[in-house]
Image (cartoon, rainbow, N blue to C red; front, side):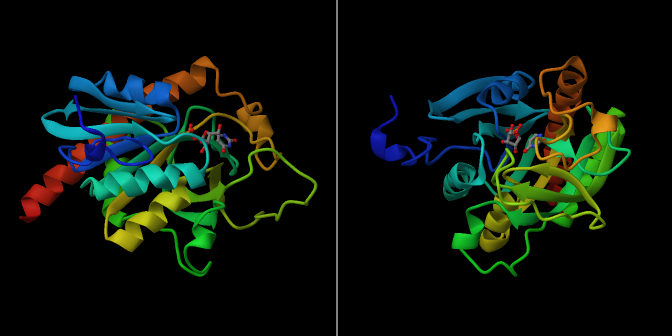
Amino acid sequence: MTQDQDLAPITRIPRTGLPPRAVVVGDPARAATVAALLDGAEEVSYHREYRAFSGSWKGVPVVVASHGVGAPGAILLFQELADAGVRTFLRFGTAGAMRPGIQDGDLVVAEAAVRDDGVTQQLLPPEYPAVATPEAVLALESAAREQGAPYHRGLVWTRAAFQPGLIPLFSYDGAGLAAIEMELSALYVTASLRGLTAGGVLVIDGANADELVDEAATGGYDPHREIVAAGVERGGVVALEALRLLAEAEERAL
Ligand SMILES: O=P(O)(O)O[C@H]1O[C@H](CO)[C@@H](O)[C@H]1O
Ligand SMILES: O=c1cc[nH]c(=O)[nH]1
């Protein structure tokens, strides 16, 4: 049995022995679904919303781990995985569409994110950018093309509040945002601060509760539909395949 001191304090992931590349997802059930695609998948920890597996994808050892809903909790997983030696992170999440022409089940590859995440503002000034690693963006695009998955590339709004409140929402109309979700900017900031590689691919699951999006195209927020499940199935393979492409490129560069 793993000794207590060998486990990270919050997520309880093992502090040593994890592969250096990870797919991170919000939902613990999605972590299990993605892990089921791996050879030799093994659950290495499950504490709170943080469920972690290790295994290999086409010969590349990987971690698949869940971070739950919301950036303040998710950043703890990113930090503890980084402390445990993970150097490449791809977030595979769901998001609401914000740009006409983006449909349910489509993928959005996120080049950068608006830092409205509710946690990184407490860590460093708001002028600091939340950007993906270019190689990760390109690897995700290549993998999406390889899989024949409909995808778009663009900017994402990471926003801490999911439901509307009394404060009127800032309108990003005209700013060209592609999608809205809740954790990606925290991952990108963590990666930049620590010199890690990070990217994100999101499956569109409809319109956001804040009525920000193209509701006619997406039919309203509903992640529990066949069209979203099909996107999730494609997206899992895209994320794993992108990790493999990144590993291959790193090996070539040695
Ligand atoms: O599907 P995941 O990865 O959880 O991502 C999105 O879904 C959750 C909201 O329903 C938030 O975590 C948001 O970022
Ligand atoms: O934050 C999120 C996640 C999924 N779908 C949305 O509309 N918003």
